[in-house]
Amino acid sequence: MSKKTKAEPSATLKADYNPDVLSCLANLSNDEVFTPPEVANAMLDLLPQKVFSDPNAKFLDPACKSGVFLREIAKRLIAGLADKIPDLQKRIDHIFKEQLYAIAITELTSLLSRRSVYCSKDASGKYSVSKFKGEQGNIFYKPTKHLWINGKCLECGASQSEYGDEERQGLESHAYQFIHKAMPGEIRDMKFDVIIGNPPYQLSDGGNGASAAPLYHLFVQQAKKLNPRYLVMIIPARWYAGGKGLDDFRDKMLNDNRLRIIHDFNNASECFSGVEIKGGVCYFLWERENKGLCKVYQHSNNAIISEMERPLLEEHCDVFIRHNQAISILRKVKSKKEKSFSLIVSSRKPFGLATNFTDFSNIESNNTIKIYANQKQGFVKRNLISDNFNLLNSYKLFIPKAIGIGDMTKDWMKPIIAEKNVCCTETYIAVGPFKDKATVENVYSYTQTKFFHLLLGLKKVTQDTTSKVYSFVPMQDFSKPWTDQELYKKYKLSQEEIAFIESMIRPME
Image (cartoon, rainbow, N blue to C red; front, side, top):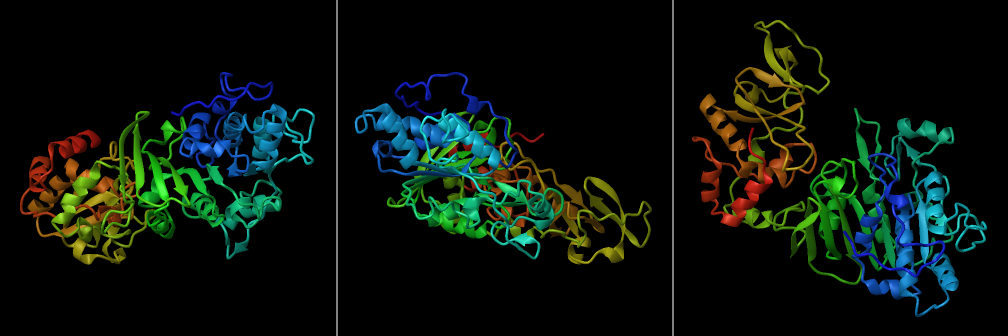
């Protein structure tokens, strides 16, 4: 995945051992994953390599877990500064004391990081490769508290009901220093050339089920405030088009012409073995003094399948199109200026009934109507319906609100054709209304095309399939059924574009 950088041999830093202990660590959770050394090196490869020959360059990992970034940077600096500082021990002392800094996310990861970087959990101990005055060295950790306001942390959005007790009991509070105005004093006013890391991804926000609020964007935003020359981070890719509370972050990222390189992985396990992160992950290079187009690399099956230098935002788009090959297809579709299919897709809770609705009846009567709820059927009293009566009295489609994992190569929707006087809970969204069964069947045929799924998938980067993810899908004449061949011809798609769609979207079962 990346080129190995040779380091000068030493008793404490070896580049040829196998296996690498940092590639064997079990992840803390799906939200806090350790970065494999090969991924860390691929990220370091994005930087201009001359930075590793600069004795004045300073590096910061603001979310240190295993110390892998500092360790791999140290290897490169040991090689790159050999001519400037010939004595190996003086070189190591200079690198560790004057160039490498980190803020650990927990006490445990601070100890682990010092062990992997300094070869000792105590940076002042006799086994440390470079003797510091304090035991933390330049890998800092201090327990930090949330700022609770009305049950939420003002600075990171964590739920007091989820994390308040842990804080009171002295357990890990997940109040990360970097985003809680608790920067260690030793580095608070320091200017960094490179900020690099893999921040925590999310925290439970006290909502229903596994509801969680993202955190990674706060690390990116705080890093930008420090104004480094270069910023490199690996984060979930769902910010491209979705994510709770990420609209402002997405807008700022996609309008920032200092974001110069993105490596996109639809399958997160290509970076983090055995970890599922819905929507995949990406790592990027942001350069303070270098503005321009962004070079987008797409990865699949452990290989780069496409690269393209392009604007982060297509004209009249508010999301990032992750697939380079889809750009020309979307442009052809938009050139016809047709209305969006999203106009006939309902909002959440189309009939006012939540997912956890339980007031069902097993008996059909004049006062009840059929209901679809979490793949179950039953009956509900008509007077409990509070919204979309026009849909209730018409033909429509019910589509599950959550489909797949946000991977267009695997996700396939299977709508339910619903007749008149049929409703659903929030488990589904409704598409319609349609005047007769023939029309709704024609709409159904459209939803079963690969063309439809491709345009849907450009905005669907998680399980959620709300109305906004249909905005790229154009409306059609539903007096007739539709096939892919007819749609390819209508939009004058090239053989290359057709081949891309056929390769990306799995066959209908």
